[in-house]
Length: 384
Image (cartoon, rainbow, N blue to C red; front, side, top):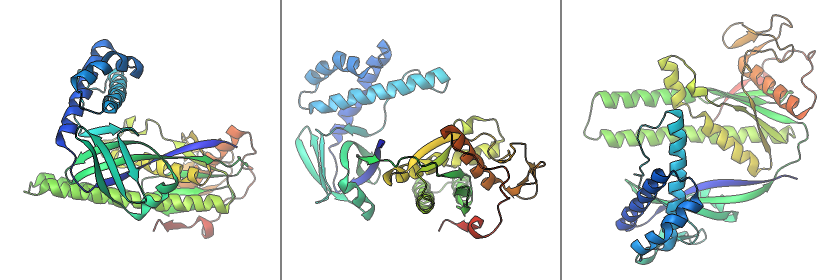
C-alpha cells in the first residue's frame, strides 16, 4: 500500500500588529544573503549557511537565531528561481531582490493552538501571543501535523500562513479510473460507463470582472485601488468556490464507480503557444492549475490515486479507431470511419482513459462499443 503526504496551507489572521522592525531586519538579512549568493553563485543552503550564519548572528545578537536559518532557506530558494528564469530569458533584473513583507518561520519561531485559537511568535522583545480569526474550514487541520509557516503583512492586517501535513494510505489500483477534462466553461469527467459534464461558467465570471477592471482603469476614481482589490478578491472567492464544488462531485463519482484513480491532463506550457491576443488573455485569466490542485489534494485525502497523462489530441482523435475527427455542429465531433458522433469533451474523457489504461497495461475501450447516448448520466448540469 502506497503512502502519500498531503500538505495544505491555512491562513489565519492575527488580532494585533507584529513589530515593524522584525520585517525590516528580516528583509535586510535576506537581501544580504541574496547578494552574497549571487556574487558567489551559491545555490546550496548548506554552503550559504556556513559562510554567512555566524557573521549575521554577531550582527544581530538580539534576533532569535532561527530567523537567520530561515532567511538562508528563503535566499537559496529565491536565487535558484532567479537562475532558472535567467536561463529562460524571463528575468528582467540583473540580480534577485527580495521586497515582500514576508517572514518564513520554522517550528522554533512560532506555535499555534487550534483548540484555543491562538498563536505565539518569537521576536527580539520575546514571544508575543495573538488570537486567531478562524472559520469552520480550519477544523480539518486539527488532526494534521503542523509544519513551517509564513508571517505576511497585508493592507488589512497580519496573517500567519501555516503548512499542515498528513500521511495518507492510497488505495491499491484496481484498473478502474475517472478521467477529468478541464475547460474554460465546463468540466467533463467520468468512466467508460458514464460521463458527466458540469457547466462552471468560469469564463463568463472572469470576463465580467475583467471588463469591470478595465472600466475602472479607463476612468480613474479616488477609490480605484480599493475597488480593484475588492473585485479581485470577489472573483477569486467565486471561482475557488466553484472549484471545490466540482472537485467534490468528481470524488463522489469516483466512489460510486469504485474507482481507485483519477486521471488528469498534463497541461504543461499551454500558455506559451502562439495564439491570438484575445485568446491569450483568456487563457492567462483561466486558473486551470488551481482546479487540478484542488482535485488532487481532495482526492488524496480520500485515498484516491492521481495520474497525469498527455492531453495532446484528446479532443480530436476517435477513441475507437484513433483517426482524426471532423466537426459536426456545435462542440460535436464525428468519426469518418466508425461514425461515432459525440461531444468533444466527452471524447476527451474517453481518450484520457485510453491513455491511462495503456500506461497501466489494462484493456482499453473496445472498438465495437456502441456510441454513447445523450441524456441521462451524460446530460450537462451546473456546478451549483
